[in-house]
Length: 116
Image (tube, rainbow, N blue to C red):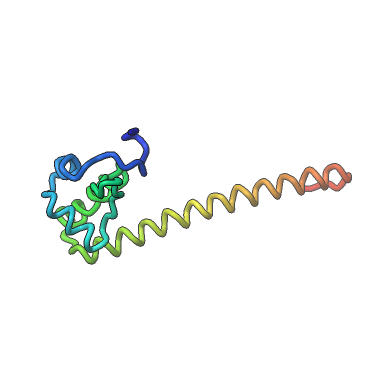
């Protein structure tokens, strides 16, 4: 499995817990409350992706370094996810708008209409 892909599930719970320095029971609890949702193998083994590991590290920073409780960390992570998704959508819309503007400029130029 490619551990470089952010969504590729590749770490079992024992490896993930060592990577983020949290007890496996803590990871199970975080899963129960929805902070992280690892994939499951055919045998129902939890498999964490690099993105899951990153999310767990963010939870740690929020709770240990900034003193945010788990409910607050959940809200912050959800809002961050939403902002990132909206930024991608805005970037796509901006690119489509720029392409349409370019297309219209070319069309106007073809018809001899000057555009500043």
